[in-house]
Amino acid sequence: MVELKDKIEKNKEKFLDTSEKYNIFNEDLLKFLGEDLFTSPASNMESMYNAFPGGLIDHLLKVTKYGIYINNCLPEKLRVDQSSVIKVCFLHQIGKTKLYKFCESEWHRKNQGKMYEFNEDLVSMRIGERSIYYCMMNDVKLNEEEYQAIVNYDKSDDDKQSKWYSSSLSTILRQANELSIIECKNI
Image (cartoon, rainbow, N blue to C red; front, side, top):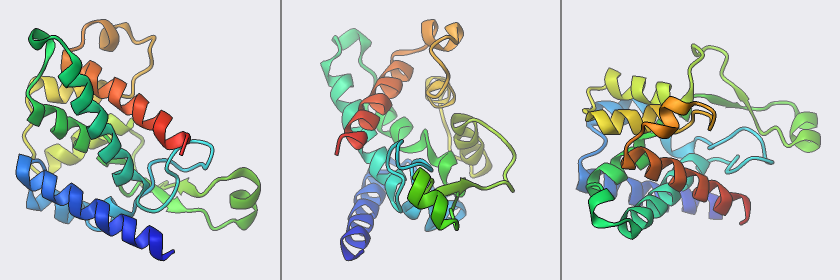
């Protein structure tokens, strides 16, 4: 448990330093999300990815690593500003903050790997939509491509509008997110 607390603190420090450097999170958004931002899981089931305290920030940092790498591999005319890549990687899943509650049922945790339950007090939204909502509520400015990338990252592959008419930034975020999930599931 001490190792997990240390990892959460290390990730929190790295996240906050990077956010400050690139001017991503403002004071209002940080206050609204609170410590839940740093202790939230990335998913509710062990069979998924990062279903542990601090799993969300761990995932967002990995997405950012892959996002920067993918962007740097692109031909120059397809690259986007690195600060936008980092911004959407940091913000695209903040809608998961406050989304999960610890599963009190030992049977479900032990037999199904259901570590968290959904917070039924929240209005139903896709994660990208809730992330945008949190940004808008707290006056975080996004340009059109940043908005598109965040709101579309979690749409299915059969959504032709989001797949075929998206920006480089949107594609970078989707691919970086998928690579991070692969890494998280294989650790």
